[in-house]
Amino acid sequence: MGKEKMHINVVVIGHVDSGKSTTTGHLIYKCGGIDKRTIEKFEKEAAELGKGSFKYAWVLDKLKAERERGITIDIALWKFETPKYYVTVSMFTPSLCIPTHHV
Image 1 (tube, rainbow, N blue to C red):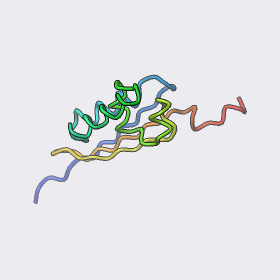
Image 2: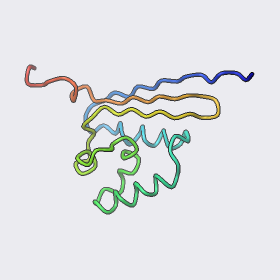
Image 3: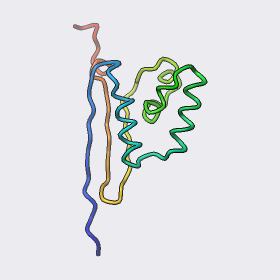
């Protein structure tokens, strides 16, 4: 019986347009949570929309509106495992979750 993998939970919070999706997508890629071929596919698709630098953001930004506008609209959740860990990444922008018309 082998040693059970440790669970790691990562929460990313930040202001709109602060680079959360890009940084988090790059982290997921570097940790092996998504393969190079998928990143290359995202890079090609993003370039076709004139947003080539968004390839890592598209790991988390799945909605068509998110990709067209270049902003995260919904809370993002990504799970993957490495040889040693189970990893869960949660990302959100507080201003998207709190109605601002009351402020």
